[in-house]
Length: 188
Length: 205
Image 1 (cartoon, rainbow over the protein chains, first blue to last red):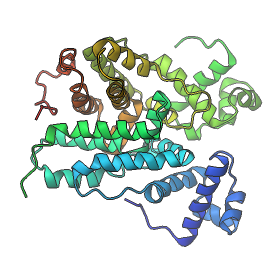
Image 2: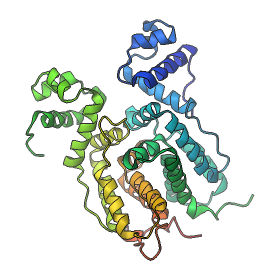
Image 3: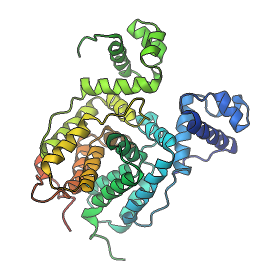
Image 4: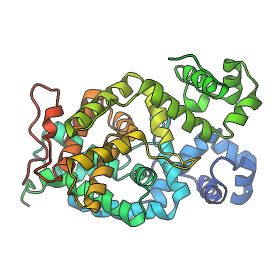
């Protein structure tokens, strides 16, 4: 879920770029400035991330896996709670949230749009194994969609909601998605 | 497509042509200027950053290629969303631009999309007595499940085609619509086009 292991240098580059995105926005940050902030040579940044797109995608994946990491849910029915917390985390770092949201919407050239998919499938299979494939897929897809920064961006932009209302509405929708399977858990 | 009337629109029309063969990231202002037959500086004047260009391009594509079928009732809404997802599937490069533009930090005052207003208007009619918070919960969920982002995530993250994405939409929107007051709720299943609708995923417990 956290992607390929990063070297110490790579992590320093991504952390430096992340800081600069919050200070300056993602458009205006040069490799020279990133190198200086990370305390390494500009050449080293280029060697690790040959293009700005490479750098941006790696940074977005790193931000999602570290700064926006979710507390692991033990049950599929805990997922709405995790979504509520995650929305509040996105709200605290709006610039970074937009970067993660945008890079996940680039199709095959972007970051993985549903990094939590496998975990959701595992939880669902463990508790409610008797679902037909289409229903299983729909529940996982809907929860993965809600448990993403796209929710925070959309609810804020389209409805002007604040942190509390975004968290409420996202968790509510996730509860609704689970409505059809609440009573279908396999007894332990 | 109509004949472009001004420079700003001509730039967008040319960008859309280039999108057929390369991704948005691979469309440089230089290449775009050559395609339109104007200077790079003119493009910068219209679209100071790539985010401005992306936002304008998405709006233009939405109006030109993905006009939203009008809807008033819940079942018309579901049918309109299906039609939209099928249109996205037919022109994925364009739909991804829409999904991506809806995720960026807004360059101008964010205006709610037309579909957002239409969903709110639909709920005003379908559930006039519903309290404000629940209405907002329903509206946000329907808006988000009918979005280009939903289509993009299911296509890239789950390898689904238009029919499967429409099915996933029905199953996600079903339990949300089931929260509307029973007296006003139209049956979401009327929008289904499959001859054998699957067992309702949102059966009441």
